[in-house]
Amino acid sequence: MSAEDAKSTPPDDDEPAPDVFPDAMLAVLTQRMAETKQSEEDEQVERMMKTAANWRTGRCAQRAVVVLDEWIRRLHCQNGVLACGTYSGEVQTFDIESGDMLDSWIADLELDEDDEEIDQEITAICLSEDARYVLSGDAAGSVLLRQRGEDDPRLSVSHGAAISGVLWDGESRAYSTGLDGRFTCHDIDGSKVAMLQTKESILCMSACDNYCALGLSDGTVILTTLSPMRELFRFTTEGGPASAVNLISPSSLMTGSADGTVRLWRLDEPEGSERRCTTFEGHRGPVVCIYGDGDKVVSGARDGTVRVWDAATAKVRFELRGFTAYLGSLQVADSWMLADGTNNAVLKIDFSEEALLAQEAEEEDGESY
Image 1 (cartoon, one colour):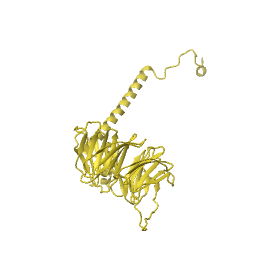
Image 2: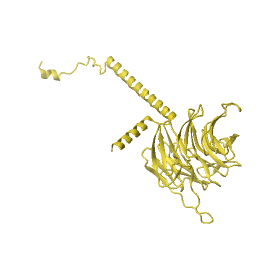
Image 3: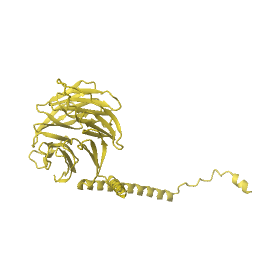
Image 4: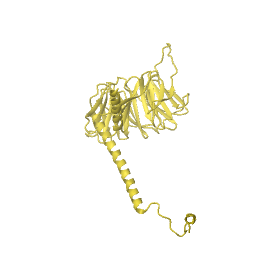
C-alpha cells in the first residue's frame, strides 16, 4: 500500500479511542486544582488576618471618595452606591469606586411667615439594600422617598420638627422619627399606617429585622417592633440624652450619650450583672454614631474624633482625628469605614493590606518626581 493510500484509510470502528486525559494526568490536574484552591483560601485568610491586625493598631489608608462644593451632613452606602445629604438640603448619589455622580436632587426653596429661608439641612438619610431608593429627612421635618433616575419623589410626608432617623423597608413602607417625639410609618401612597408618640424628642433610631430602638432626649431607650408598631420595653441609660443607638439584635444594642460615653447593653443578662452593660469612656463631646460587631466598637462624636475600641476590654485601640464637630455619620464594613465630618468630603478609611500597599506605591511615585 502506498503512502497516499495509508493517509486515506478510514479508522477501524472497533478500535477504542485513545484517552484524552489518562488517569495519571487527571490525578495531577485534580491535585493542582486542589492546591490552587487551598492557596487562594490561605491568601484570603492571610488578608483577613492582616486586616484584623490593622483594625487593632489603626494602620490604614485614607482617601476622599467624593468632594462637593458644600458641606456634607449625612451619608449612607449600599450595593456600591453612596448617598449624601448636604447642609442646603441637596441629596446626591455616587458610584463608590469611581466617585462619579449618579443622581442629584436639589431642595425647593421654602420660606417661613417672615419670608426667612427655612432650614432644609439633611438630618437623616437611608438607601434601600438594592440602592434603588433614597429616603431622606431634613431639619424642616420633611421626609422624601426618591427612586433613583426619577425627578419627582415617590413619597412626601412631614413631621412637626426636625427628622432624626429614617428607614425604608425595601417594599412599601417608610419609617421616620423626629424631634416632635413621633415615630411614624407611612405607606408609599402617603397614608399613615401607624404612629408611636413619646413625650420626649426622639434623637436617633436603629433597626434590626422587625425590631427598632429609639433614643430619647431624656436618656430613655425604647425597643419596639416595626410591624405591628408596638413598644416592647424601655430603660434609661446614664449620661444624659441618648444621642446615638445601634441595635445589633433584639437582646443586644449600643447607646451613645451626650456626655461622650458609649455603652454596650446585653439585655438577656440579668439586671445588676457585670455583663449587662459595658461602658466605653473617652469622648469629649456627644456621641452621634456607633457601630459594633462583637470584636470592636467604633464611635464618632462631636469632639471631632472617631474612636475604635476593643469590645472585650472596653479600652480604646486608636483614635482618628481631623473631623469637625459636624461629624454625623459612620458606616463600617469588614475592611473599611466611611465618614463625613470633614466639611465637603466623604472619607474612606481602609484597613485592607491592598489599600495600604496602593497608598505606599502612590507616595513613592510622588517622591520620585
